[in-house]
Length: 317
Image (cartoon, rainbow, N blue to C red; front, side, top):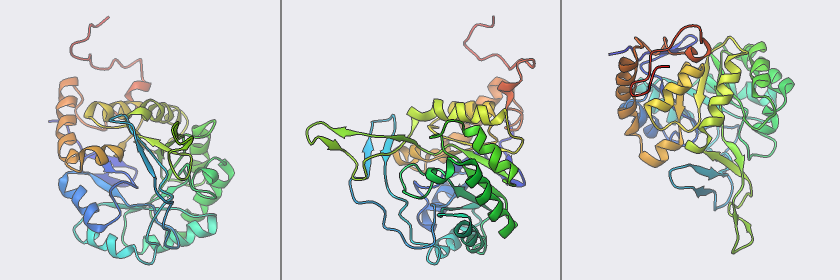
């Protein structure tokens, strides 16, 4: 079977399927559960300087199997409380990245130092939440601010730093370039796509906050396009996120330029058991298509002069 080991810079994972931040990683037990189910690694819930209750209900609107629209408001217990959850997962050997969010470079760097002390293998900077005022994509749409924050974090810690960028901007590749220039070790693309649902009977938005972030299969083409464009511009690794529910979805991201992928909304639909299913399915798919390893697929679609193996069942013209 094809080799499923995935490398993102200096970090190595047993397979390319990582638990994304925000859906399942609130507790140490849930992070550990994803690992035991078969995930290659996990990213924690996004953690801030202080406890944050998030927005009032309703916070989620479902669109069947196509996705979720949510405006949770980054609820979290704060950096002083969360390390005990990380300890549960780290003691069991789970490869973890700590996700953090803040208002400015100083807050991000202070959080980075605190998160680094927990024993995580790397950091993911949440610069892309579409519905948190003064945070997330409000910062992450500005290349100068992205560069400033990334540089401050890299000066503060020695860990690998992944920058999670927003699709809600004119040119995500420009944001990725700013992060790379400031020392980022990898780009995570993408976070949710800004969206809105309105209840015609009530005549008002469905979510209490109004706008939210759309995730799930409906945004896969957006995520793929962002990874594709970023891969054309940056040299650092990319971690693809958005709408992955199958091994074929994951392979599309790899071919577009991702070195690994993260899964979030599919866990909400299917549970962590999908981490036991997807690696084996990807291995079989790679074998059938003639790829000896995950690394052989990364960015392959950008090299048209090197013929890709024919897809079974489709005519070769």
